[in-house]
Image (tube, rainbow, N blue to C red; front, side, top):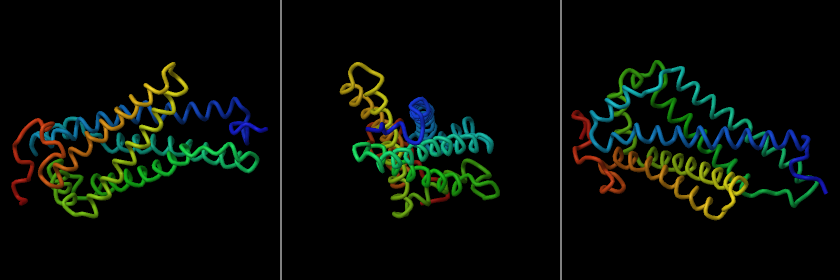
Length: 226
């Protein structure tokens, strides 16, 4: 019976592909998500606190290109791995991996959302690129629209599910307590999701999803907006 990882590659090639795809996604993605959430969390304090933190830690054009390039590389490895599995399915139906298919779908959703977010907010040549205050005002205005809010919730949720399932799958192979590790991966993914949703809720309705976790009570609304 052929192994799912043996077609069309040798076992060594398949193992390298799996490891490269997993570690490229789990490590950098989790760290950057936590960092980005921390930067954005200043919006729960005040508009000016958000502007100050973003101006201090905002990536330049090359930095954003590097992040998108990293996501694209991770996605390309994921597509290659997914196609490898599909090839194996033609020979062995037991090679089906529903979780890998799920990760591929939500990964694609997240990549589309990330592209939309970067282009709409930080695209060079756009007025919103000029200052962090204009970017904040644009987020405050756009997230008040149901369609845009829905796009952000779907994108953030896709990121959390993609990261959580990736961490859980890695934990099953790398730890002696796979069940406990899966729970830990779920808690981490949920925490990162809540971190992002807190900010989105603040910009959408003027109040965080869990007000008790907000660092300050000052209004986040720009002075020239209602």
